[in-house]
Length: 253
Image (cartoon, rainbow, N blue to C red; front, side, top):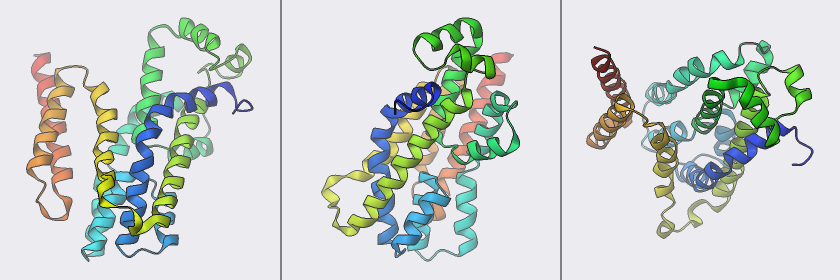
């Protein structure tokens, strides 16, 4: 790790608390894929190609119940629609980079990578100069790096987070595929999945609109647990966004 550029090391360090939760999440995905009848290659390939934990679990659950393929694909797309919002939010910080590099970075876009990166970028905004000195002191960048990249290695920091998540996710999935049904239900690994998202969600509930959106989406998601084709998730997302916007506009008036 000492040979990695300082911004990458900073990204890896920032991702460490979240990686703890991704390990059981990946194990669950691997075990569920094998249990649904996917071959080990297909199960691992899904983690490499799709690289989206929540969508993978939803797709696996639908495949297990012989759901029509178009519904499976549509569900995966709907669940991952939040990536559009992530992309729109984080894109201004990557405007200066080349398209090919941005395409590489886009592959590593996950809930974890977005949450950690955007928190750092927005914290740096009030005083970029002072933040640059802070990053220099904590080793996340160097004067030479800032001379070549006025953004202070934002892309490499993001890559450090995203690549760490990717490695842990793929390895954990591979272990889950290898263990298969050998993982006892008593381990309760499924409980780790919502905890991963709660760890990302709670710090973002910073004001009334975001809190109202989170509460509304949570209530609707619980109420819609029994809906077919996991429809409770997209409905909860839509309701949460709507409530958040309504509260924000109400506060603006």
